[in-house]
Length: 363
Ligand code: ADP
Image (cartoon, rainbow, N blue to C red; front, side):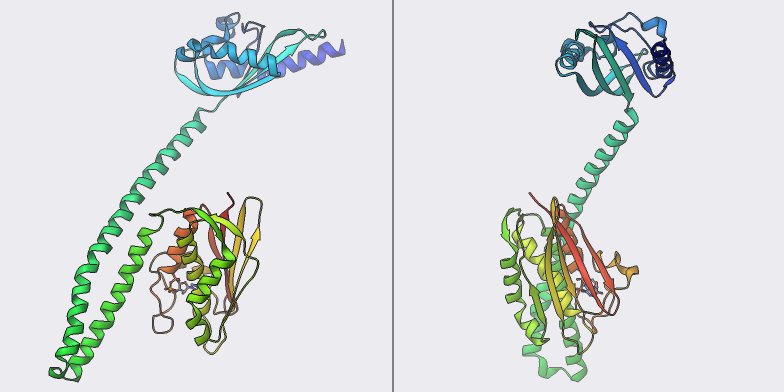
């Protein structure tokens, strides 16, 4: 008796649930019970639907493909089946249903029917579709912009090269016709065009990232060794130290990864207090599905309010006289990390040093 009372209470509770359609089906899939949620999601009153087959909820193509029977057969064979897809309401409008069908057996172990629980996930699927379309849109716009930057910077190089060549000619052949002020002006023009060439080259490199994809197995210990050789002049000029040990092998884009290490290490060597010996340490830590690298320095550090700004292109925190540079390195670096599917960020104590972290997923 007590058991019966409990069952009744359970049935009553099921009946009241209004955000899940909970229904019982017989062995053939005919509907035996109908709760508030089913009425709300599918739009039928209990007396309109009880006794009919649950196939009515499936669009024509799914019925043709015999999906409802297949789901019942799978639930019978495996005890349970989960399926998501478009379903029909009473008024023939569609909703995205997430359905679990569980087989029910009697005490002898014979199949007696099915319990079916459906959730309406239309809003979620709509939101996901909007986000996906938005992302596709953004990606297309981004590609277009990159193409524009590439063409613009490429085309800008040529007239600039001309200006440069003629300034050099003027300096070589006509220097004696210029007075001191004239020569000073020429020097300034020459420095400016030189700087502009660097900026344009930076832009061109930035827009080129990821154009030639060559995904290979890389020994980072060896790669940082090459970077060290490239930076030897800078390191010995500052008496600096570049420490690295047990860096892993991983799958990545070699040219870009080398550029990334070079940018971060260069900054570590560059942004030091006057007279201080820079010490840059590169290390890596394995996580479940990615490597986390750290490039740490003992330099001037970065005020936390600027920890996002520094990754934007052409953003710098110092004038060029104090620390040379053009503000492209970190934007470049972030793009490289993102093309690998990782993240790049900084932790710093101003006056004591900075650590740039980046992750590279393990493939
Ligand atoms: P650049 O080095 O050419 O200035 P970056 O894009 O590499 O350009 O860096 C942007 C700015 O971020 C730098 O101008 C500097 O202000 C700050 N920054 C980058 N790395 C460091 C570092 N290791 N220590 C302190 N400041 C840094």
